[in-house]
Length: 137
Image 1 (cartoon, rainbow, N blue to C red):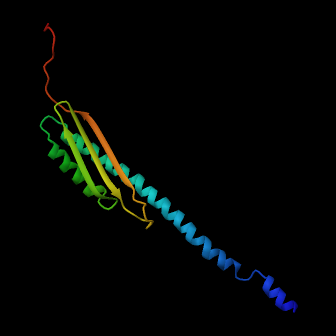
Image 2 (cartoon, one colour):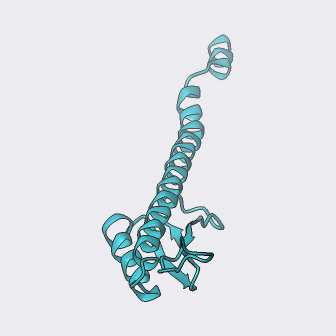
Image 3 (cartoon, rainbow, N blue to C red):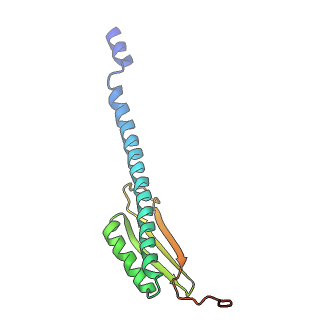
C-alpha cells in the first residue's frame, strides 16, 4: 500500500509537463520580439525610401514619376522582403513636394489579425528659381 501511495504522490514527469506548457509560450514571445524588430526595420526602410524619393522629386527638373521610380529602386535594394506590397505616393506642387511610402511588414508569427503596416513620409520645398523682390541696389 505504501508503494502505491508513494507512486501517486511523486513528482515524476512534472518537468516534462512543465516543458510542454512553457516552451511554446517562450517561443511565441521570442517570435513576437522578432516580429516587432522587423516592424522597426521596415519603418526605417520606408523612411529611407521616402527620403530618397524626395531628393529625386524635389529638384528643379525632377518629377513625381522620377521620385516614385527612385523609391521603388530603393525598396527593391533594401526592403523587398521586409516591406511587402509597398505603395509610393508622390505629390509635387510648385512650392512643396511630399512623398509617402506605405507597406505591410513581413509576417513571422502566424497570429490571426496581427498585420503590421509600416510607413515613411518625407516632405520639403520644391527647388525653383525665384527672382528677389524689392528695390535693387
